[in-house]
Length: 195
Image (tube, rainbow, N blue to C red):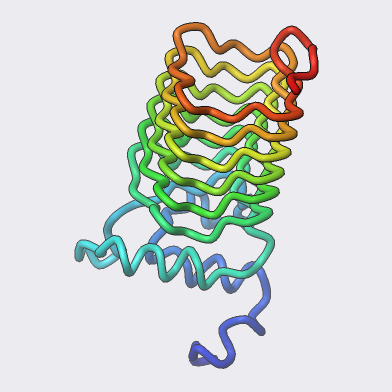
């Protein structure tokens, strides 16, 4: 079957994942791959470099389950990507650039976001329980109603971030820069409601 923009979304999940391998390298092609073991690359299989726009276009065109559990996406620039409601639990996004990325209601539990740039990212309602965000840049990020139970925000830059209604119970925020951050109706690391 020839893949066109019109019939792309009608393909089965397995076939669609095979098509996306232009941007992703799957570890084992002998058996149907687990979506949780995707590793992003910046080259096509032909060896030709892909532009950021080409990679984003492929990521955004996959409107399957957006199941990226355990994916290795460290040090990539996926700024502006639409990953609303995506499952990114246990994903390695260390030192990645996610400026203006839409991550509302995404599952980022136990994700490694150390040193990631989440400038103006939308994390409204996201699950960041036990996530590691050490030294992450969350300037002007929207974390309204997000759950960050047990998250590590040590030395993170939280300037002008909005944590309204968020749950930070048990989170570590030592050394974090919180100038201008909003914590209205948020549960703080000590479990107390900030009003």
